[in-house]
Image 1 (cartoon, protein in one colour):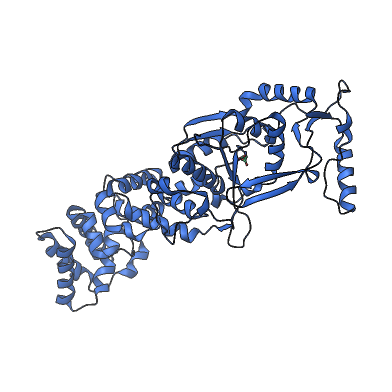
Image 2 (cartoon, helix red, strand yellow):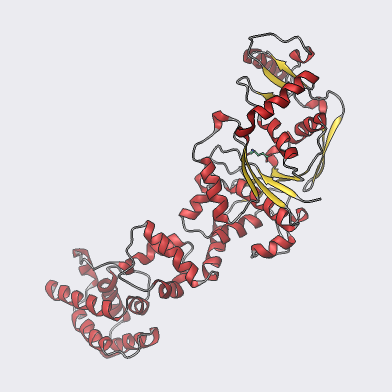
Length: 467
Ligand code: GLU
């Protein structure tokens, strides 16, 4: 049997971490067994659709490297096909038209609840087999079996038994004539030969209802794996309303897809105590038995830890390209300033995200330094003398490397018997217009000799003017 899995998002918002993890696990499971992974957009609930959602889902999956073999398929393209099946189910008695008003249903629900009963459709229209009223609004309900039970053999949580008497007669077609999620999912999983349905545990209660429809239509039942929820630090379900869960927001904030994928993988799946996995490796070992039954806590610190790891791990060329893109977004012109590759090599270990890196490093690409009045506090009495001496020395330097630059800095400090700060602080102000956390020799090395000499000349002019 060829394994076929699918990711079937409803396009009601951006691709969120929970959905992306479901897609990741479904994709990995298909890859593990050389199967196919299908993307299906479940867009029949027109009222809940959000316009940019499909792009956000596709962009998110592409960015994460989760590639589908078939699709994207859109359920709205098949509406008349689903409705045709519903018609034949009405005809055969497997489904029936329900004319109950919203008000009646509300009253039934309230009365059941007041008697401490589980609210469910009372079956008023179930008795009608063929006598249907013309020109009256109706929904179509599936005639769920009244007796017996449904056993869901979940790959992660084992057997789950549902009693049919607890299940509702599900609405499979709305009043406006559109088919509902629970119906379309059954038809598509069958038509697309899905062997394993991998989805969030919020769908567990839908599974027995879907199985009953499958049985009624004589379909084969796929295997199910329901993934536990991802919760926040307080243990509450992370939701689409919280933009910390928007996958593309991590792209914008400068996280690497490798980091997010590795983090999401470990958010519910483990293999010993290891944290770092290459995706190629996981494609060979991924299995349901290693998926946790309990919920997983989303922890941004942990994600940043992964990001730091992958920022150090990816190639200098790759990281430079990403940093360049980030600078472009920020309108930072990198033509005047350090070579990006050198900068990346030297500073990559210091940052959690590409965005942090770009935010901190943009000071290296200033066209010139505008000396503000507030900078005066960084200038000491002897600054002009010391910096002039440093200027002469650095002008004669033979080799432009960190070590040679450090030796010159040290020699100046020794000669004038000053604290390093008395040279370092004014030099930072003169070179990058900020007393930043970068070491002075790194700043000098990265800016390069010609910019350094030019900036010191301009800086000395300014100091001599204010003195
Ligand atoms: N469309 C459903 C959702 O976005 C998922 C359906 C399924 O995986 O069966 O929650």
